[in-house]
Image (cartoon, rainbow, N blue to C red):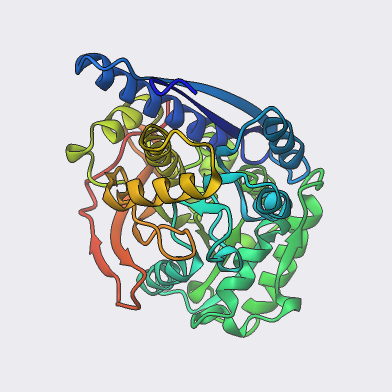
Length: 395
């Protein structure tokens, strides 16, 4: 192995219901390599980072063949943005074959396993539940109706067993659908009927639909905008980490209008203030506000490269130690990158965002607050933002 040349291998979902997030994460990994190469050139180093990227569909069946193909060609560390279901699909293989996975995207606490070969550069659901609870309190929502994509069922179940308002939600009160769904009329009709049932005994201002979806929130809202669903038009919609700041949402007149009318608001892992982070500043100017999973991929790209340079060995345990060491000392776009014993990021900042129809700039994602969140059991520190502070829209 040439110690001055490192190849990083990535897998990203660039079609299907995670297309926007996958493309953003891919762009972030490319930017991390460009930034490192620029730094090496400026300092007179001979080091060079090269990327080898595999693009797959969003469904969980696509990821294992891609991982196997890379591993069989000699690759033992793979970077990406994988959902919890995608990680479940590859976990037995990567653990049995000594393949290290560095990822964002997945937050299921069921995958927080010490000693395995999966490092997740985002915190697990135990921190997200506090962010969700904070948002529900801010928005005065006390009754929720869940809409759940089956690939996010693990995350939903993890949140229902934690100390939060959803612990009272029964299986009959959840509208579920899978990734093979073609058209959303039946799903939205079920949701409308359930909301109608709830509204017979609850005040509409206290009810919110909590969407555990991916980017398919766009066609779902397009369908929901029909006059056929009068119950849905009476309640709020609350987004979660996988469906906020979706660029396609602003490009759909129906979905954007409906989301703004329903005051669609949610939480997402957030970057540090742009004024102290050059990468965040560039990516916002190029893409608009992107989901925090992209920033996590930027961070893990830097850490992976430095770990490979630190320890040229392809031994999996040596690589894991090197990645853990570099993560512990790296302060990236999402703040401190230190991993806990289960290989999950310890620290997170969450942003609260809403979809707004701005009178001069059209539809934009507007940040309404932030929450400094640490997995220590402490109450999050919530800071609300002045109403005039509107972030750039996606071009």
